[in-house]
Amino acid sequence: MIVEAKGVAKVFPIYDKPHYRLMQMIFGGSKWHREFCALSDVNFSIRRGETVGIVGRNGSGKSTLLQILCGTLAPTFGDVHVRGRVAALLELGAGFNPEFTGLENVYLNGTVLGLTRAQITERLDKILAFAEIGEFIDRPVKTYSSGMYVRLAFAVAIHVEPDLLVVDEALSVGDEAFQRKCFARIDKLRDAGCTVLFVSHSAGIVVELCDRAILLDRGEVLADGLPKAVISRYQRMLYAPEERAMELRLAMRQEYKGGAPALTVTSATSNAPEPSQVKKHDVIEAYYDENLKSQSEVIYSSQGAVIHDPHLETMDGRRVNVLNAGERYFYVYQVKFEQTIVGVRFGMMIKSITGIEIAGAVSAASQNAIEIVDAGKTYSLRYGFDCDLAGGAYFMNAGVLGRIGEEETYLDRRIDVLMFKVMASSDRLSTGWVNLVDGVTLEALEGT
Ligand SMILES: Nc1ncnc2c1ncn2[C@@H]1O[C@H](COP(=O)(O)OP(=O)(O)OP(=O)(O)O)[C@@H](O)[C@H]1O
Image (cartoon, rainbow, N blue to C red; front, top):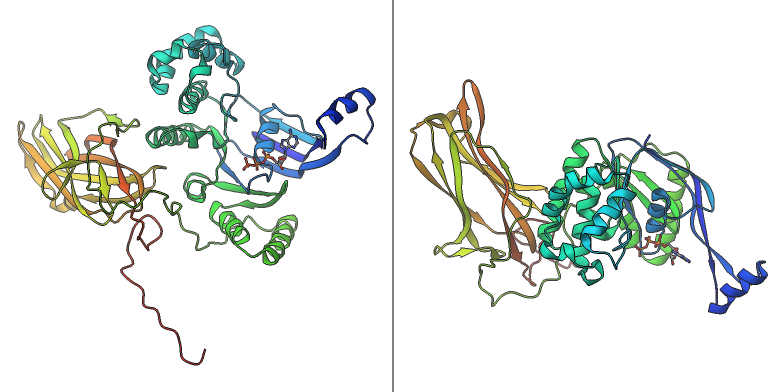
């Protein structure tokens, strides 16, 4: 176990008047404050390599719990054991000295996280490349925007190779391209065995990214198990009328305290993003925003073929990357063959910001691949698609496959090669990522 919390409770003193705090310090006793229990009897353990999402309403104790796990807050009762190196992104700017430059803070933060100066220097280029804050690195961090803070803090956190990465809502501050880059990196860390613990208000992200979710409510754990099951219980309680919510809460508490088998119940909760707040777009045409660039591109080394110029086009051939929901577009790229290759086919994928594969296609089934493509030949690919997607940011992959020896393998492969946005339509009635349902009939039944 990398994390163990046993009977953890946190009680905060609440002072009804500011000077009561001073009175308390001088005179002591219990009459100057009330006590507020932010966490009570929290018990769980987390295995190495698990990705755990903590969910719960505002004020339910999530941040308090993370701070206790990271050692920045002491529990009032109970024990917490965390083994290994912990990198945490808690409040914005925590761990940074505002008067120091970004660079000085990288060293400060890296040292606090257990690296030597030499180790930090060795990783500095990678940290700076990930943070992408340019010359701001030499300015005091008090001049940073919240996005810059998060970029730098995340860059340091992932480059210390933590055993446990703890992320409070911090990531939601970054822009979408940066969030995607961070989620891609969290995936990589997870693959390398890092344990990830994070708080998120997005049910979709928890279901997609986590192996497990813990629901906190009024400082109590009410559910701990499969993300879908936990989230569906949480949402049922969240959206229920007050009395019903109380009943659900009691039922969950009983289920949890009774040691219910890991919540393996499947539920109808969707992976869908929250309905977008984006403004009505009806009058705006799809357009090209040159600032919209993927920051998470992964290029696999090519063998014999190279992908060029991936982009999106409208039906009349205009390059765009901000699309209208419901319209048709082409995803276009060229592939130049540097060697003669047999068994060639092409592929693409649309991914969400958290990396979920929404839709993909290949140019042919493997038995119908192009038998032989001569060196020097270029192919142009045009995948037509109806952009029936919810508003938000998306990412494209591009690939070309061929046979090398007996094996079909990627000749060139680009992950997150381009980023695009879909403008949400305010009259969209579908929910979820993709609009598949083409209508609903409604009938009031006689005599009811
Ligand atoms: N230092 C403190 N003194 C007094 N009360 C506190 C203190 N820190 C937190 N609390 C209270 O403890 C409760 C839990 O707070 P916490 O920040 O952990 O909740 P949270 O679930 O992270 O909320 P959010 O989703 O809004 O971030 C809240 O009611 C909060 O007001």
